Image (cartoon, rainbow, N blue to C red; front, top):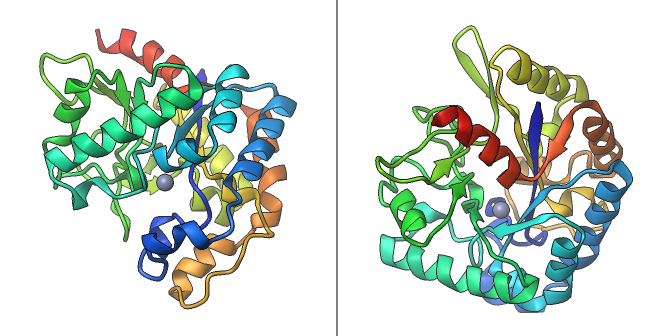
Length: 281
Ligand SMILES: [Zn+2]
């Protein structure tokens, strides 16, 4: 079973959890660490001999075109994470269209490849954005991995399907949600990010194995370049819960990831989507 491995390419200060304490206007003045951290991720993938999808902010692609080109040259998929991490439910359809367009232009220009996949910042496609998938389909995207079918304090669309589906009648667009695990009717997040870093490795291994075997479906896993960077600046003034989630176990992340990469088969999200597409025919 080929599982989808993905990286959301954004810097340490661009995460949703710090939105209330770090102003976008200050981004230009903060030390950028995303390039070296993404390079460390590439080295890790090379070591594990896996290919992945890099959902990249247009803001990052514009500043580090060589990084985006290198990601593509090494055989990974380059996809879009929007322009500057504005969550989709804070936009209207026209603003979303413009955000997508600007991000894709920067990413395609940098990478020299076509972008066909999109991941919403903080999984922000939900019941508040009934127009979002249509906008993606209109712009020619093949897939979106933008829904977290779970209730979470910052995001989530609990009623959404757990696995790949076509959200629009008459359109080929596939939505492939981030992985959840279901036990006795209760859903838990199991697709990576902070959950992978904070919880014991054994939980993620068990959950992905359960999704592969019991549900018979691929897992969709993600993390961020800053999650393998214990040396990043600490943000003062952020809520305690956000700081706990952001900084715990950063130094252990790399070895934990290597273990996970060795335990299952991993590949690019576009490949996994095409395999799932056959099942949806
Ligand atoms: Zn993100």
